[in-house]
Image 1 (tube, rainbow, N blue to C red):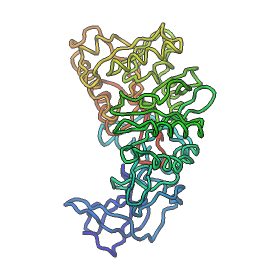
Image 2 (cartoon, rainbow, N blue to C red; image 1 turned 30 degrees about the vertical axis):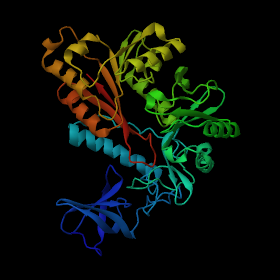
Image 3 (tube, one colour; image 1 turned 135 degrees about the vertical axis):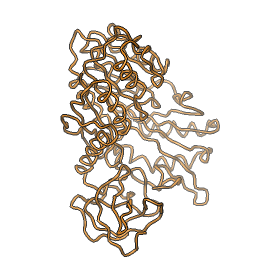
Image 4 (cartoon, helix red, strand yellow; image 1 turned 60 degrees about the vertical axis):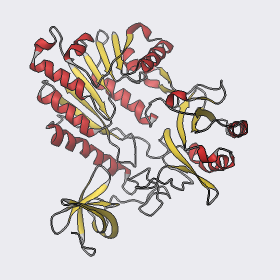
Length: 455
């Protein structure tokens, strides 16, 4: 057991941005707020047979990478915002940590070592977050409304007056939004405001999706309209139930969209659609993915987990034919419409299929492609990778089918990337020729990455 006066040497940082040390008994200790290279004392909160978990209490040797957090709501104190976990670590060091996480996962979980480590993709570290889900809580005893992320390790909403990771235009509206909600009749039945920012070609649009548990009275709707009139970039959407019920408070107004200027593509979307949180990094990521894929004009490409067409449409500007595959027929219809609006319907097609139940037979049914772009959710693309591996072991499962020459895999979970990479490299006969981290979420422990596989 770690003693209160025991000084521990922090050796690493884990996926939750906790310092990792060992006490005098050799037991692993995870320390909230500690950084690699530091000597610390810890207040232990949880004890297990093989590990302990606690909070930094005293610091004898400070890391050269420790910095003053940029947000007043970040910290280890009670009530601190839990939206960020790494503001106390220099932004460049955060990227280095995430790069190491990608390497370690690929090797320890997948037994895969990239031939080349690419420079991590990084960009603005403040004001980058164009999507966010703010919790709303009316505190009757104090007569105030709180809007923000949850407190660290708590279900309570942090008392946020500013937020440094969203654009300043959003941060500046947090207090006015609190006043607005407090004035509404339904204030104690409005649990959430979801933010989605886009560009309508002329100005930035700030879509705010208000979740309401009861129908809103006309007086409350009038207050929302007055707020939008006072803040012209705001566009109110209402969500009475699930995501499918989201609709504009008032029809008309500018369209929500984002652009990929390198490819001349414009992507309309709804505020509850999945789009990347960080548009600056997304634009760079799409460009790098296509350069790594090395698409030629006479090639056929499949974009697995195509979503709204974030990669499909740029690919269609370079390839002879692109097939986008997604799990939802409704989403596929949206992808088709986006292709049409960008004048790319001639060489794109879309199919709805459950990608978590792929088989060699289904894989063969989609035909042979020269290149693949794979961009799965956190669960990864295990069924897809396993189908490829199964065919490699038994070609009779898909007569005449040949695997793609190159795969670019964009991942939001290094563990599932490593698992799938293990199948592609160790069973299906691919080499992992390159990989890197993608710092989509600065100041958080979230790790995105990109990897290239070649036969």
